[in-house]
Amino acid sequence: MTRLYHFPLSPFCRKVRLCLGEKRIEVELVEERYWEQSPELLRRNPAGKVPVLKLENRFLTESTAICEYIEDIFPTPPLMPRDPEAKYEVRRLIGWFDDKFYQEVTNKLLTERIFKKVQGGGYPDSTRIKEGARAIKYHIDYLHWLLESRRWLAGNEMTLADFTAAAHLSCLDYISDVDWNRSDLVREWYAKIKSRPAFRGLLADQIPSFLPAPHYADLDF
Image (tube, rainbow, N blue to C red):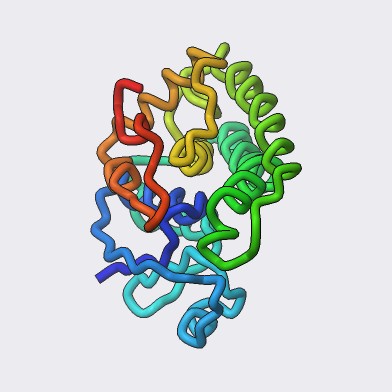
């Protein structure tokens, strides 16, 4: 059995879940309280991070490396283009969301609104929340600019770049921190991703003491 050690509101875990779901790979989900740094987690991944994918007798770590490994082993349906220029654009956008967007938006909003309470980290920092709320507007505008000339974020085919962006935005949508009225193009793009069978598991996620936004699982949001 393929097993994924994950945390439901981790965008990196969600990216791997979307990749597995799109390729119809059955996986057992095991929730991991990674901040507790259990000996079992450190044995699976000395970095003490999730996701960790157990595939046969191997433990795979780092979300993008996991997804590209899955792509190589299970190439259908494809989530990475073969053309070097197109592949570069996909990887560039993955880096944009997993680095810049995460640092400026996801980490600030999720940490302050949810993770601090879940992990016993004290009270929310309103300054960081305001910074994240300002920054997401810029990123949505950037997505809008991309989608003005493309069907999907990296080109005219759906790729891992779309799943990466959707993984981050879905975490923020859970806590109602995405202004979908800012861009019809971005909302329509997210609706297409959200309606895919691979997304169903994410829409069923529940964090104890934190109910999702009322529209979170609504495909007609």
